[in-house]
Length: 250
Image (cartoon, rainbow, N blue to C red; front, side, top):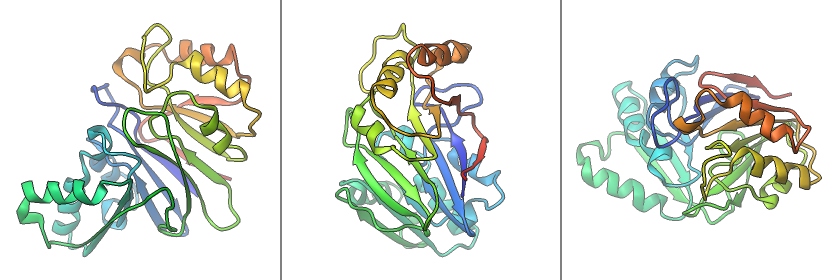
């Protein structure tokens, strides 16, 4: 299985970072998780391209996670692709319908399937999916994804530091976790490095590597400082995610 970071930024623009998006690939199948602004362009630079990605799983409906959803639909239509499936939290069907009301000429251009889930997610593109709600300002789900008998990747979505989410990642080869701001920013709905490090240390979870993502501009030039802050609490393997980084998950 491969994990490719398409967008590691957040709602305020950061140089070199698209908004939220991750591509998971395995055995010729591909699953896009979130589709924020700039993710379509990042996806076009991958070997499968947007033409090979017909399934999108949404963590939640904030704009920096869904802004390129209709641009993806349009690009697939113009490229001659015939379908798109979108799965997400309650309200995803309404979200897509409202987008199509605003851009009615896209209606019917591809075979579009949209499904809400209630915390139970079907297998998608050959990936088994488990879901867990996070601590955020709107309903948001973290996902644990794996192929048959393979290692798990946990995409933590947007969340405060939460011991339940870390337990959800126990045994995973990779945990991708929100770390939006440095320690000197007073913030809710997202963690600072010291908050995340303390929770990682407090929970006895076996996690191969933690990748930090969802960076606001406040973090630019301070990533080493943020890693040091986490290391002051947690001695596990932690790294900074960058757009275009591809990880082989073994």
